[in-house]
Length: 527
Image (tube, rainbow, N blue to C red; front, side, top):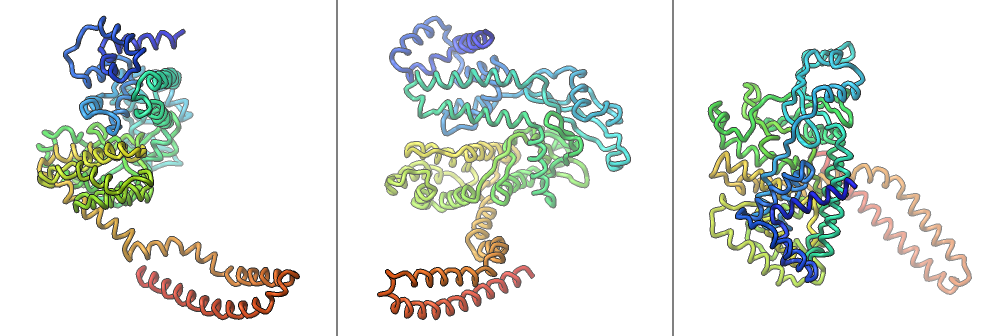
């Protein structure tokens, strides 16, 4: 019954904000007549469609707000005006009670607040749909003397959130099936796949240990960085519904006036932000994918002045070597105006059907990219270029991978932040050396040597077994020779075996010499 009531609320909200009119032209004829009746009874709204969609999602509650945030990343599916409006959605809800928060923390950590913390701020500093954050100071003990007076932040999962999420997700799955059936464009938009992707993302966010592990990985990747700081996780105090981490001090990157008054160099900050992002993507293939101003601080401590501080690691992106190679070569080919290479990369990736005509795809890519070169390089948005390429690829029935759409959304955020700090930021000038260095590492001599180093353990296992494998192979050949049906060929095989042994000896000698030489080169390079 509650599900029917909730579904009625969703349809009422859609009617209230006149959303049925937005999908009228895409509906099948029978459904269209019914929707026209609903539109006739709806007060016409003067608000733009993107704003109406955003307001409707906000009215439906935090889970729909979060869905809208995720949907804003799918610029390959949505028009720009809708995506831009959905990006404004703020995931803010009233905090749950102090008593509930304390009870959850004490149950997870197995001790009272007073035993673990010398001070604890029961009033949360931030509250969202999934969790809220408190500040405190650890008391320390004999096992962990380093905890004494350590300032920390505690993230607590909202109580009772799972049933709410499961209920709304079930409705979203139902709505996705309805849209796919009644809309003529439903299959192309893939509503069920989009909701399934959101389902996975939201359930991942419910496990705070996953977020802690993401933070730990990023911290390890940038352990020696002078540009980025990541809070340390206190692993003995981390659980699926409560995580405790080092408290970080800084000013939100969105508070530009405060940063300017503090003497922060905006040009350096903008360049550092681009370098951090591209290093995450191409050096490690693991990047922070929720880089809005609320999650990015700038340190004003004299020892770390001007460094970035990242927070909230619930959303991260992973790229394979294949993805990184595809992206790097696409960007380089684009800025060299080598549209044929861009088209070839799409076909080589396997995302374009094998029967696609290269010249046709090249022409489509040229149509997308060429207008950008009428403006200065510093005004070109790599995020927009990537989005346009993805949209063009849709015409050729390309299935864009989720990790790449997540990267494209994050790249747009990075560009927006960078140009907010420095309107003259030349993103390409900053990113190109990183891309070229990565391509050189993968395809040049250095990449070859690194590949040998990675394969060395496998070679160490294989080389000692080569004589045995060769002997077993020759023995197998010898046994076949004893069969009657080989009698007529026996003499020929004897001659062939003699020749084979001679060539085998030569091959083994040359292989051993080559491997030895390569190992010497690797050793010299390591020194």
